[in-house]
Amino acid sequence: MGEKVIYLLFFLLFFSFASAESLPTHQIETDLTIYQECFNCTYCNFTTFKGPDGSNLLTNMVATASDTHYSYLINSGNITEQGTYRYCYNCGSAADAESGCIDVPVTYTGQELNMPQTIIYIVILVFLSFLLFYIIWIYPSLPNHSTNSDGYVISANSLAYLRPIALGFMWILVQSITYIVANISVAYITSGFLGNFIFGIWQIMMYANLVILPIWIVWIINDIYKTAKLKEFIERGGNSF
Image (tube, rainbow, N blue to C red; front, side, top):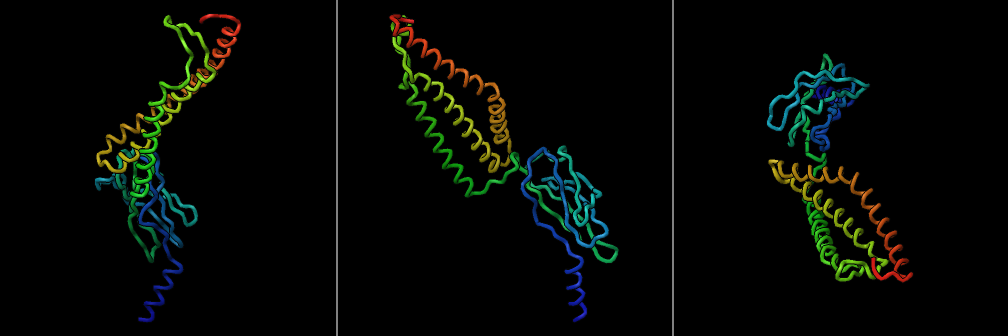
């Protein structure tokens, strides 16, 4: 009995493995590096990589060794669904070996949403929605140029540029709300279609900003410039413009 205890302690000290039950949450359709830390091993290979439905996506993957670190790069083409993937390893030497499996949670954003985060998201969502509706409500009352019945400007308001600024804030709030709704949908709707669809809309919005933001800035600058010219024209005796 004593010899077995001594052998077990020797094994733990000089032939040990460092592994986790689960890797950090990974983003769908991106390359994944699976790894295993193995001390005093002469080999370490990955036997299978399973999809969320339990099917084998890859088998017999030869690991790349770097000292005690063994890794293998899985192409993004093998990670096309949300869910929990799993890879199994077999490491050791001619005398001793150890095998096991590691879970890899995969989501659309690469982030795992838990209940406390969800509550915070919902609070922020309610606040942003309230702010959006408030800006929409006050938008008609924001300063603007006075016009006559024919639509000509008869009085220029220096604060008229607040209107395009308000529209820009509305756009930012809509993007923020879309992002939060997409994250909550991805985390709690099992089919993933709705979350993916909303997240896709958010991505389109972000790419659209490459065009919208420069136009928005030019719009504000142009509005300020035109307002200054209008005030100058009216102060010089112009009746309308």
